[in-house]
Image (tube, rainbow, N blue to C red; front, side):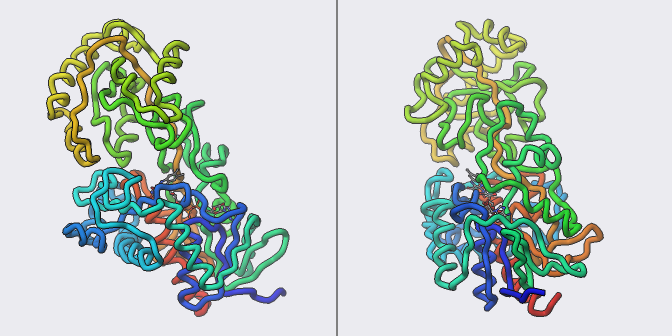
Length: 475
Ligand SMILES: Cc1cc2nc3c(=O)[nH]c(=O)nc-3n(C[C@H](O)[C@H](O)[C@H](O)COP(=O)(O)OP(=O)(O)OC[C@H]3O[C@@H](n4cnc5c(N)ncnc54)[C@H](O)[C@@H]3O)c2cc1C
């Protein structure tokens, strides 16, 4: 038998893995970190770094009173109480302290109101009444840089370009991993390999809703999101949680990039369902918007006029005036001189579409949206000008659908210590998981921008601490 090389092995060097490695080393463990790609960071470094947490110094700096208890209640309510309360309470209690830990490592989050995920400060993350979306300076990359700096300071070795092949299991205990066909032994293993958004077969099996987008589906998650945690899970007979859940954002059928690169549809637009009716706040958070759109009869269309198209700011990859005109010329975006003709192309009742536009023109352009309260959402996003009426043709209809796949939620079921459970609900000795790989925190509904990064870093930190304690006690 080969000798134990270290106390803790961490598999995957994204947000959860770095948090796990650093927190384990801070507790005195010797740690080895494997990363499949040539650089650390995974989806975490591609992210906006938005982090949901309650009771933080940033909130206090803005005079906002908040508690983990309120966060917990909101989290459970939004997820229909389908998640394990003990795990969610731990997450909600530890997200704030984890954020403070990151600030201590050099992450900067100013106590300023932020209008969006790219403006450092505090924003509304989802549909919470108390703002909890913490936006760090330099986004996800800023989080990874701070954690990686601490990793170097602690002397944790990161083995890059090395994809762990399998777990090493003896007598029901995880005792290490196999990488490059070499067995590497440790007291505990933490799986932080991210999600499976880049693996079509696993999407079919664990997140079939993502396939409803058909050819419009595009994946923004990091290339390393291949679902290796599910292979390890099968090997260790781990239970799977979060089956069928993930985050897929509503986009136009022609978008192929994350929205900050793709651009945004005209502010003066309404979403119309298969009955020709307006049905939602078009700026609703993706905590709820995907679900609302998926529940509509028929297709969902963004309807706007030529002034809306021409007002699109230049410099974005997809939502650009010329691009929309090209799509219309090709017949993929619908275009008509009158709303009656547009309704015919859309296959919806003309009277309903005309009534929706008339009502929109009478409401939000004058400051209120009695039906869908979009004025409140726009104000929270820092908007100071009302949208224009939808006035002169030609009019456009662009099909909108959930097609931008950001992250997946099915993974190895963990408890509140981030220990992995087997099918009987019993801890698998020596095995921990966190981030997208460790399931139970990310639920049916995405609680708001910041849900996944907070999960990765908070549960990663908890995994590192507990793997250190439990491996030394051989539990
Ligand atoms: C464009 C984009 C924007 C986002 N914005 C936000 C946001 O602002 N806020 C938010 O909360 N969430 C956001 N998300 C989601 C969030 O970033 C992720 O869910 C989260 O960061 C995942 O962290 P992780 O550590 O689980 O996985 P990752 O950060 O993806 O790390 C997993 C790592 O494991 C490595 N790996 C995989 N298999 C192996 C193996 N066998 N051996 C060794 N290494 C392996 C991968 O290469 C990768 O580096 C965003 C995601 C994307 C793609």
